[in-house]
Image (cartoon, rainbow, N blue to C red; front, side):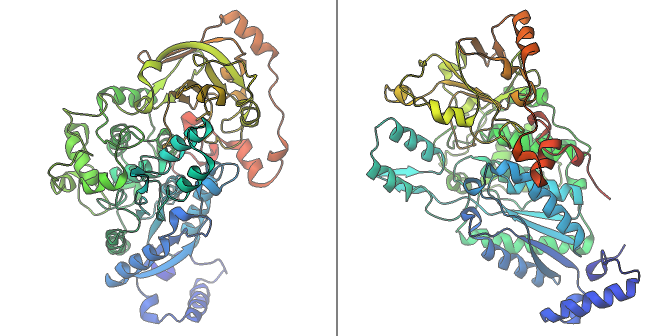
Length: 568
């Protein structure tokens, strides 16, 4: 099998000429024959002026290149799509699969013996790992790292849990315009991803648990020198992988490694998005994520990381307490420590080297968890035949068993227009229902599941309500919120049948979400249901591809033609 510059030659009908031409043109960049005869490590550049999460990527790239060259290989940097959560319209999830395809095709199209992917903001790490799985080239993943914490009036701030908490106070009239503007400048004091257990931090932890990144790489703060030393070490590992031709993702992503990732997802109080992304990654292998098994793990695995939004601390505290190696040490027999990693070491080797930090309380022992059960539960019932998810570690305990009257919003736009209407017929015991916010309906399954508390109730002191939808929610958010109701309403799921005033029962202990309307009435409503025609936004280009092939949340929201590995 060809390697280095001879790999994947352009088709001119003459292989010798193809190599001759390739070398002639790349020499225009000033490379020597010595450089061009070495194993090649490709490095993705996901820097963008629109992406503050990735603000340290140029420095990470330089450190990776240093590590590659110190190990005798040749680094080659190439650009891919960059996705930033708060800058992506209509939602970053809409673009995740496009980034995965772009990254995969660039890995396949260009000569490289190993690849280093650098990502962080919510959908970038999942997209890059999906690409790496499908291309199945030796891959090192580098998370960009979390921001450092901010401060306001003596209080520690973390984007974006405190974004939501303080914005809710502003909506309720407790914080005025002057103060909310001051807060706005203090929530994100450095580049990097959210410093709470949002989706970015969740996916970084999952990546490390899968063995695809170096130990401690999930938690090192983005501006710290240690982040760049880790990047240099990652370059060294990538160079070694380029020379040895492995290990490939297909060798590391086993049934055991996926189970380890699911255990970690529960134990960290991880984002509900993490389950969708892990499902999409698994579906590109021969393995699958079993929602029932995940829910069972949730009853067995306690939340051990005391981190917002489920706890009190922030990512830098998790890091200084020993990071993921220390967490896995505390999880003990819940983790398969024989799972391999990119370095050739097993998790057992890594856990053996975990730092013991006296007095730290960010990582709890199993006999003193912050929550006795895991972060998430999977619900079923007549409202969610194929499942729904609740992050009950960040919910109000008193609402985990609740029956209330449905207040229905037809779309994100409808909710935006009516939720603060003083005449809205709503009280604190009602269940807010949002539909047409799923993969097809929105499109892109936006993070709209965190429905705001209607202003008149917020100003009356209401902090939480049961809220249900076929949308997603940021991992930084909190509240009693049922998400990912599947099938979504836009494809005729039961959520489409709910009417104002219907009673809905949530029973997390029994893992149920039910519409308390008899079957005959529901069938009558179903018969009268008219599914929407192909919307105008989906008539051409990527939008058309998305609308025609997107899968539901329980299948990871990948495209239907991307499942099954995709290896050559």
